[in-house]
Length: 79
Image (cartoon, rainbow, N blue to C red; front, side):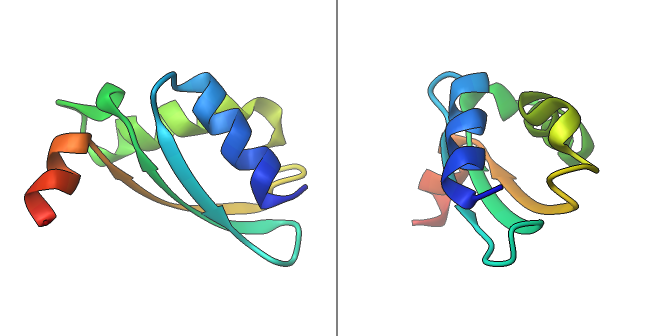
C-alpha cells in the first residue's frame, strides 16, 4: 500500500475532499483530510467517514491510519 493510493481512495470516497497522506513503511500512515462532509460531526464520526472510503483495507493492508480531519471553514479560521 502507498500514500498516493490511500489519498486517491479518500478523495474519491468523499467527493470534494482534499487529502494529504504520508507514510513510508507501507502499513502505517498519517492523513489530514479537509471535507465539507465533516461539518457538524464529532471527530469519531469524521474518522468513520474516512475509514469507510478505505473499506476492508483498514486493519489489513493499512495497519494504522492517524487522522486529522477538518472542514474547509475550520481551515479558513486558522489562517
